[in-house]
Length: 192
Length: 206
Image 1 (tube, rainbow over the protein chains, first blue to last red):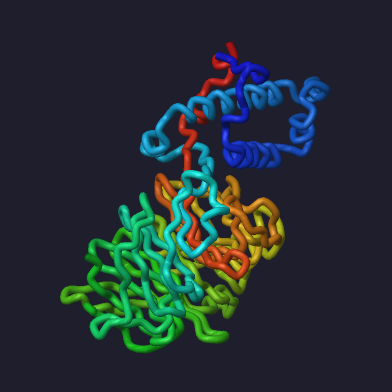
Image 2 (image 1 turned 120 degrees about the horizontal axis):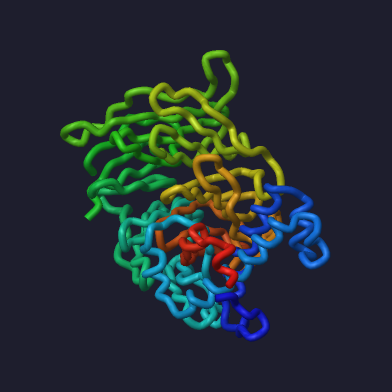
């Protein structure tokens, strides 16, 4: 099942996959030896130096390419849901939260405008399907849907719950722990 | 509001271990501590102990710790002031190792601000290197990074310019990024090449 590099339409593969994939391979090679790194740059001429490793690396390139092609036809979610182990490849940006020029975003990238200027947000947390953004100097914690970027609600700025420069949030079993910097306090609130 | 601690230090990163202990990085000018709490019945936060700025021999072990993450028996701390990642044993607070030093390299850090772990992968907001690094536990070997050129503040979707916060699960890496005067929180998909590690390379090359 060797992939024919010449006949594969590489343009269909997002460049970010390649950049990350090859960075991982280069890192592995650097850890082995400088000589092997050289061999990868010019495998044909260096075959006599480290034949077993070069053969393995060439195979790895092909295996990687084959897998990337397969990825194009596979649901990202299904793949990620396997066992979570292996070589991670960071894919394309899915969602940008913040007031950006939408015309600069590629097709398919979601944008969630904030409607106010972020003022030193310092923490993001994934809580199930929610994405929390701790907006430190606006003294708020915003909650968005991570799948669609929809704004759900904000925490803070009320008589019941207020912060003075919150810096971090952690959700555990329905409770939200918040580092409230200028109050010097760690606060616990219900996360509904 | 369920509970809150008495006023104290400026508080930053938070994490909880498998036993329900809560770790909170606190600093005040030249002082620093990792506070350890338990949440008891009635939602009362009780401080049980600290990991102090200096060890028993007076050696500096914490300098502007801002991110903490409990992983099994260890607490990993992103130290913006020491430009490294440090691992402490939770049971007794003993420093096990400092990892990395200030440098513009894949294995170095410059004001690492936050970290998160999913499975055996760790992501670190390497703020002043303008990158998010990914390492693999337990040896903290470098896996990859988001951010093309370390030390360069480049705008663009695939870049990070001033990452302050980061989190990760099986599907996403999320980054809180100050992108050239405009702050955005990016959400990037993560693909796990699970099968690569299981491939018999010789048999694959038919």
